Amino acid sequence: MASCAISNTTFKTSKTTIPYNSLFGWNSGKKSDNFRPPQPPVYHDDIEIPFSLSLVNKTFLKGKELKCCYKASIDGFSATKFHERCDFKGPCVIIAYTKDKSFKFGAFSPEGYRSTDDYYDTFDAFLFYWLDDSDDPIVLSKVGGSGAALFDYARGGPQFGADGLLIGPPLAPVMGGFAGPDTNSGIGDLRMAKSRLGLSYAKRKDGKESIFGDESKVTLDDVLVFCNPYIASLY
Image (tube, rainbow, N blue to C red; front, side, top):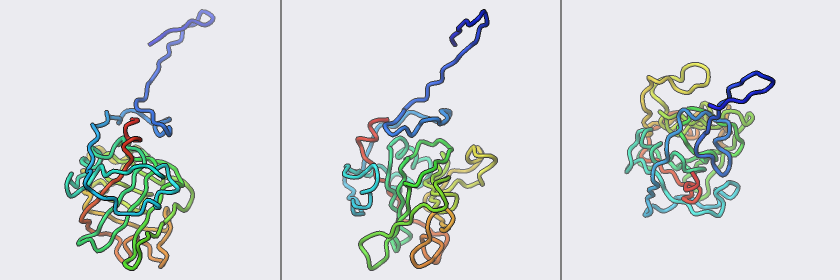
């Protein structure tokens, strides 16, 4: 604490330092309570990128090297393992496969993850999926304004909008205000995913209101996350 005297009146001032300010200002104005030191970077160097790099041409990752920082079938499907491997890595691409790898889909998070129990407004996030007869993904953009495009729950996996795409949501309902999940909620399991399109992300081109088509909930075989090691090193 520091003191300064002005006109014979003493005021106490304090300074709070929020760690890990990033190149893009992702931490600006965010609370520091849930921040934790980044883990040493570990990547799955033998895993090839399962999508065309043209997918990120309009993002911060354009032209940058991408490596797999998380593979659920190796690292574990719990939200805890997801955050251990993905927090403080910067913008990332998430790829997931439904049971028996029958359907491939994903999402782009321009903010990445830091277990903030907070949300982010942006038009830069998007979802995507592949049809069986196409090599190029179909992109589903943010709709309904930029509000609450991304959620970063420490006890949950990736979440896009309130209902657009949730992979491994916390096991208890979100409680009160906007402080994130109730502290008693269970850790999300990234084998589970659900989707409802139309409110926060565009519906599929065929008009279906789930990224999975006719199903609103699915079981996943695997979830992978790709990031840029250089950006991750800036944290």
